[in-house]
Length: 586
Ligand code: FDA
Image (cartoon, rainbow, N blue to C red; front, top):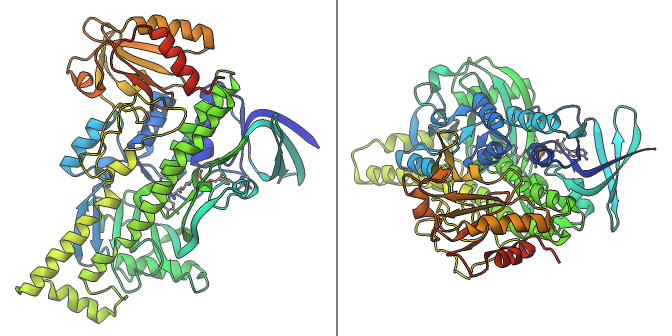
């Protein structure tokens, strides 16, 4: 039996696995990624790509970020969620979504150097995978994970080479299970889960058809269709989703989970497409059709010794809020630098425990949010008298009744407006995407209480340098390049970073000594007038929550590891203490 060695073996080349591979290779860590299939995603499932994910891509390099924008439909085209009888039928309402409301747009612009966009998984995966392989990842396709055993020094994994039918043994220091919602790795490490699988039934129908005449004047990625049966199973309503404007589409239509899954053949797919588009003559080019289940389940622990799970393997939920691939990529950003630090001998193995402490609360939050978003379609149906499914005649009567000049009709119109506006928690929940604050041994508190959220934490991102939060983005000025640079650009790329100001020069000496002592590469940026990096607008002074001589220590994943308001008597001793604590160095 062939035996192969690598530092990190990754099962799966979806968004989680490919991102982990790309990050590890960028950090100079040997890794191998295996996929049981011969290629990557063959359907465009995930698409909503949020700013935090784009920050991970930006951290991988300008070319990676640029290529994502090149293939994505840009934020403006994501426009408004439309609620209608069918694409050709009557429109019931709209909701400006995904940072397209002017107030929300301002929050997006202020929060990140990146832009939200719509990048189908069929583009995201190849981008991450190519980045990984070109930087050193060994990829083995048609290689199926079967089992593993671990000991004190590493993991021995058995895979099936599906081309030869032979078993392959791969020895690694660590194993990452990024093997999706039916994860065998999660099963083998007996990860504890909460929740339930299969709470609803759904089908995806991917097809080509030029639907410009129904949509180009009201650009959106999601057109929600209210028809009899559209609240059975599925993700809250019938959905016609733009994959490529305006000639490639993905329909999501539910089925009763208590009945057998339907056989979605060409005839059925065409019939569903005609029904949702509202054109009985519509011709489609069917690309694929499949059924899937709505899940409501998350791991309460994501590690067993040298084995980790991430992505859908750990959090299984419907696509509502577009959080799946995003969270998967963000899991990898959390784990990859920790694995690199341990493998390079810069950190103790206990650092790896912080992955589960930091990411399981996120898993619970996003699974709960996504499932709640399905429920929150209810008031829209109720406002149209369709809560019980509805017979077409009653629905028509209700749609007509809402146009009357009566007090009841006005009440109904108000109810529809409010129910649609409430869907902001699914379609413009910037806080859910950006507010992740970690608590673990890899964060050293400064003794300050966590800042309370001034606005709704699900809807609005609130920047803070409170240890555990992501370092706030502000634009600074780089004298060397003459260009603007984000605070996030000064951080990341596998290194710890210190952000300080005039009077904070001793942090640079302290960091140099700690780098020598612990074999690290802490980067120090002094921000201020006549410094390489200037804060002309004063935005950083307002956002930093420290004085100029203080220090913000930022982890490679952009989260603040520690901060101190001013210069202590012995910055080197303080920094040494903090780095040892954060990196679990005994
Ligand atoms: P994923 O399932 O993508 O990948 C698993 C990998 O493991 C695959 O490469 C597979 O071949 C491999 N594998 C599995 N078992 C194996 C074995 N035994 N051996 C070897 N390889 C194995 N998300 C989002 O962020 N925004 C969005 O807008 C949407 N929209 C959306 C719409 C629809 C209709 C769906 C169905 C889903 C979404 N999602 C989404 C969710 C998103 O698609 C999902 O969360 C990610 O694909 C999860 O990525 P992973 O890498 O964790 O698993």
